[in-house]
Image (cartoon, rainbow, N blue to C red):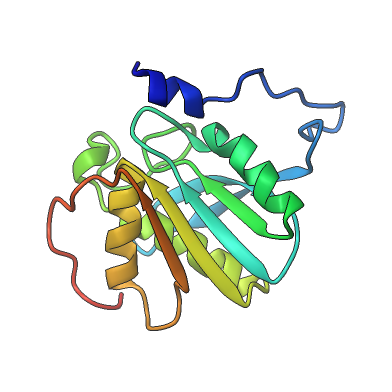
Length: 165
């Protein structure tokens, strides 16, 4: 693992209290259905009208974003970290080869979940593999569905993605 990758990992393990909540920041678990029949597991942090989806890279998972999710929550955002299909309990078509799977559908499911549950704006932050999925999701999204997009060392798109799905 490169030094920069190690720097993104939480420095200490997350501690859960008796109710299963992450100590130092409320987090609830949820699951989302994708347009192609996948089931994506996610952690939801905070409340608020402004949502942020955090999409992990290939060597990481939804828990890898915990420090950033807590910082965004402290700033007033509602944050959803997702496990892509093939990671954790998440599953769906293409999960055996995530780099060629339709991961943009996982991002879109997260964006739509935040919108359905009251977010007035939704931003997507994706790193590496998650950056490629976020970019593809922004192409496939309906106009206005994704308000802001941040790509961190994004992986190039592996295939063209058609317009709104």
